[in-house]
Length: 284
Ligand code: GDP
Image 1 (spheres, rainbow, N blue to C red):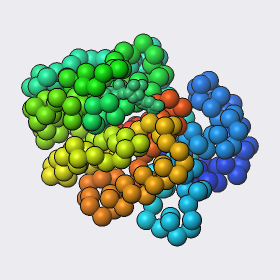
Image 2 (image 1 turned 90 degrees about the horizontal axis):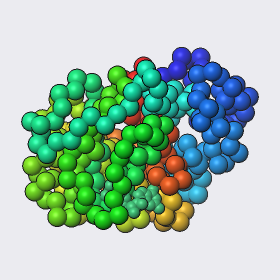
Image 3 (image 1 turned 180 degrees about the horizontal axis):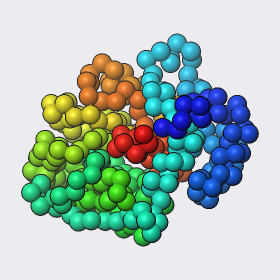
């Protein structure tokens, strides 16, 4: 995280446009992110902090159980995390290899994060969005459900590895048990599992199987709500409240704060990059 004197929560920062202006002019801020910082305040908040944007439409008593700011980085932290995801000569971001079995997985010593979810939940699109600052990295995006049959490993410089796991729920139970379960149980350097849930339909039966697996192996995991651009504000609010209640009451290992994202509008993508950089020890 940024030095304590510099660190401002999202709310205070929005009240201090001069700080945003200074950050957008800083040499350490990428040009792409500097342009983001110049967006009108409301658009910027929606892009960077979609859950806090949802909060504005809640009655005060509806906020009690919602965990909106456990992870509340300043735009300075978010800018630093974007640099971690920015491909340069010195920060190579590449596809490494694929594996169908854990003993074929590359032996990569760095911290690892993985993405799991039902086929068609938007996993490839999300990974592509996270890697948009490294456009040469090829992440396949399917039209048909169930295309990702392998674990795909991507290295992000010397920082960490991202693993795209096969989708479950559609012709994939065997893949799922053989690959995903074994991977989750045995991968020693796995720092966080990102479990994707489609915000349009909410938690489905097959999602529950994945959640139970994470709980059983006592893994730290995070629920990411995908495709939020497809939801009306009201529907998104309803899903957020329902899923938050589920997380609060039924889970132990799940990070209490939800991460809504859209791979189309990029809402929530910067925040998720920042969270990944943080859990892999790259913002310390
Ligand atoms: P995967 O099977 O989980 O890898 O899912 P994909 O990333 O291939 O996405 C499945 C479908 O959902 C594709 O048609 C994507 O274009 C669409 N999709 C993925 N993410 C989003 C999103 O954030 N918003 C919208 N509107 N569509 C999305």
